[in-house]
Image 1 (tube, rainbow, N blue to C red):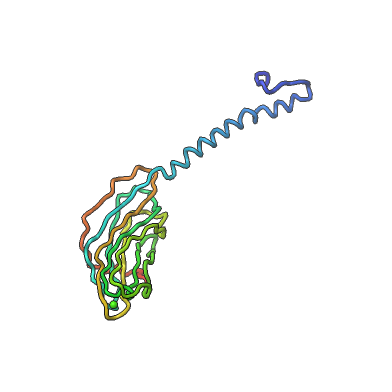
Image 2 (cartoon, rainbow, N blue to C red):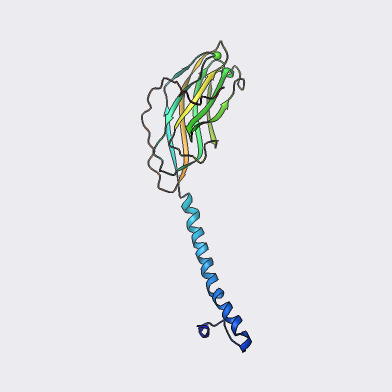
Length: 204
Ligand SMILES: [Ca+2]
């Protein structure tokens, strides 16, 4: 075998063993590097080969009791492939209220055994200007979990005198997946009475 290796030229007897020792690495290292590069090229795009978006909205109104308990409107998103993970959340919502400063407003979902909240406003953050109508993008509180969740826009009014209601709630949940994403499932929203599940209701 050694005789066929062009880089292994024996000039004298003493170099024979060195030449033989070096022969195998000289041939195998490039092969190993080639495999590493190939594996890296395959692995990087494979881990996040596709991105998808789940989008749905709930147009049904939910009254917010004056200085009362929390209420919510919800969206059940489904259809993302198994193993898909959230990379971004965007919401658009409308809350009609004559004193938004009365309100706690937050997004929440129940998974992995607990509620996970993303606060939009705490009581006192806003003032007397009517209504909250806005888009919030680049929400990363929920990154890394499945987009297939029931999502809640929750509101609690914490001061007497001014009242209002949740008017509209829409979400776009972007995810990464190893499988081609399914078509978004936009089910017809159903009316909600607005009572949030008892477990884990954040004390606002
Ligand atoms: Ca109030």
